[in-house]
Image (cartoon, rainbow, N blue to C red; front, side):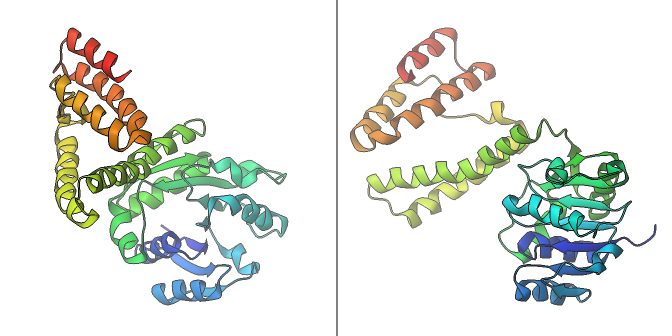
Length: 294
C-alpha cells in the first residue's frame, strides 16, 4: 500500500495522540496546523517529522488525509476555509473526530462541484483522552464509530484496521443518539459519582475517604457488566424488592438533600424496569416500587 500523507489541524491531545499513532503505523505526517504555534511545534517534536504552522498553505494539497481535531464549533469554519482556498485535492479525504457532528458538517457552508470525488468522514473514539500519553496508550484499544460517504468509510476502516482498533459504521441519522449514549455513560457517570460523594459528605465522610470506598465498588460493577451484561449485573435494594430500604433512602434525601430527591426517584424507576427484566422482583413488588418512586 502506498504511504498515505496526513495533515492534522488541531494539535491538542487527540490530534497529537492520533498523529503519533499514525506515524508509527506507516502514515507520513506532513505537519500540524494550530492556532497556537507552540502546540503545533509540540506535535512535530512528538512525531519527529513534518512542519508546524498556524498558516493554511499549499502543502495541504499533498495530503491524502486532512484530519480536523479542533473543538466542534469551528470544524465547519475550517472545512469551509480549506475548500474556499482550494487546499483540498480531489481524491483526498477530509476527516473530523467529533462524536456529535456528522461528516456532512464538512460541506455545510460551501458549494462543491464533484462532491463525490472527495472523501468525507467522521471518526470518533469512545474514549476520554485526558492527556497525550494516555491517548497514545488508550486509543488503539478504544471502540470507534465511522460515519461518512463511501470513500470516507473505506479510509476510516483502513485507518482503524491499521491501528488495530474495533469500530462500527453508523449512519448520519444515528449520530445524535450515539453521542447521547456516550454522554450518559461517561459524563453522567461523573455526575452520579459526584452525587454519591455529596451524599457521603452529609454523613461526615470526606471525598477522599468516600472515593477510597466507592472506586472498588464502581470498578467491580463495571467488571460485572463486562462479564454478565447490565441486567444480570444489577444488584441492590430495587433488584431484590426491598421497599423498606428504598423508603429510608427517600426519607433521608427528603430531609438532607431534597433537591436531589427527584433524580434518585427517576433513576430508581428506570432500575425497576431492569429488575423486572431480570426477573428478580415479582409483579406486586414492581407495582409497589413504582408507586413509591412515582
